[in-house]
Amino acid sequence: MALTDFLDGLKDYSAAEASAVVLAIAYLVLAIREHVSCWAAAFASSLIYLFVFYSARLYTESLLQIFYAAMAIYGYYQWKYGGEHRSRLRIGVWTLRRHAAALGSIAAATASIGWLMSHTDAAFPYADAFTTSAAVVTTYMVARKVLENWLYWFVIDSVSVYLYLSRGLELTALLFVLYLLLIIVGMHRWWQEWRSA
Image 1 (cartoon, rainbow, N blue to C red):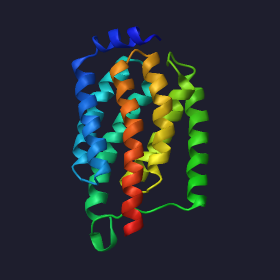
Image 2: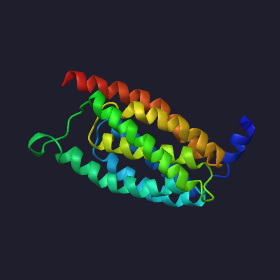
Image 3: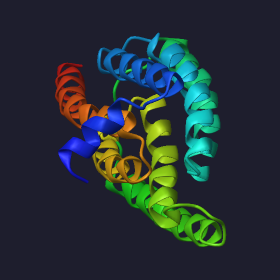
Image 4: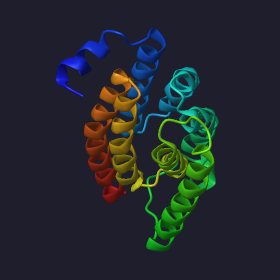
């Protein structure tokens, strides 16, 4: 896709997609700052994206938005009361064993969901299944304030940029390019917070 095609596509984005993008940026910026209101922005963005992705025939991405909305409620509760003695949750890290289990789960889910979606009119069944499966695990990591979530998101969002450009969702693709930059900021900020704890 040429740069001119990409810029022309930006003119055609929908108001729904634009609203979801603004809320998604607000979510990530607030999450980087560990502000609990990030979960309200995540909830609203997820509901809008449910419609946007379904319209683009990214069905597992659509289902993922329902999960995101539920996780926004869970994340809010965890960040407020999930720490020791129902206190504010602090940033932590996972062991290599937990990461191995997470990556194994992502691989198995990607293969299963991708195979199922390959029997529908889904645009990119395996790539869509990967981003969805990995995002489920990684969203849980964010809700539990696991430091390494940022590394997972970097891989997921890199694949997502390609998916969204391929489906004509230029504004969302641009959002995910911005996400890649913000992920680096988030990782650095959370790492500093974790080290100082």
